[in-house]
Image 1 (cartoon, one colour):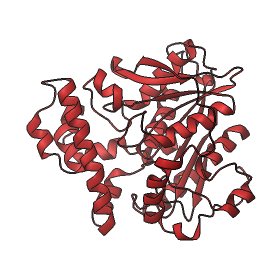
Image 2 (tube, rainbow, N blue to C red; image 1 turned 45 degrees about the vertical axis):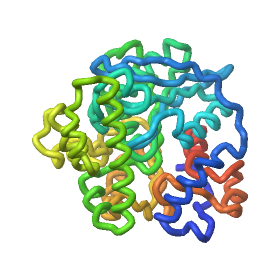
Image 3 (cartoon, helix red, strand yellow; image 1 turned 30 degrees about the vertical axis):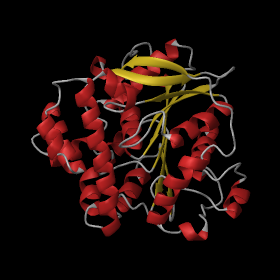
Image 4 (tube, rainbow, N blue to C red; image 1 turned 90 degrees about the horizontal axis):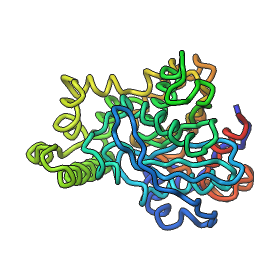
Length: 349
């Protein structure tokens, strides 16, 4: 495990909700304060699992040494996901080829296909198929899968699925050794526990309601782009994250209940099956996830030697802004502590 000074936020952000909200608002305006060169992205339509078209960006620097494949959280799109674009800039500057994509039912991918989300059950194969196509484009065959929040869950499924698909033979030209591993920040691990926890918390209700509104917009966007594929009455009824999955997702995936779907897609239960080096950065004060998950996460990582868990006291949900003192101690060029640790860990692998 890498050696680094402990994470320290500014004093006013030693609270998970404050960190989460402040980073989301401040980051949107200030994420590119260091002005890394913008990668020379090429737009690409990949073919994911089940032949679902997936929109992405690919940038390959000169003398690239390995490749990062990443996506974002529960809602969003490439154009506006500043945290993912930040990773792209930082990684590209360090010699990584970068592949970023709009996952199922998001951004331009939603315009290409009405296929809805499956929280990792099929997105894991998407990661692998995207890596195979990226290799054909010239990306180095040393692939690292990454993501944050729900995207972190998807990336963990990608690492697990890659090992399964390449175990006995090549998969679309990829060998088992071509998949290096994964690195995720604040991954969703147990939706069932976390969602019930979130909606019972005063501020959690607001966070959940905001996500639900964005999911509803996403559903209407698919409805408009692909007339007849989604029942508008079902979209009207989808006024929470739970309702979105109940009304729009589970029937298509063959699940009888939302509970069964969340249990099947949970990333916590696949951690014992991860067989490639993987870093999980996780904050104990993450306001979106049930605190009772932490002992289970620690136990799962302790019993799997390929997983490195970086569990911090503070950090919020995909926040991790560091104080000036913390930046000096870690010799970081900017306040983006979690991405800096991810890139440091990748270098050490």
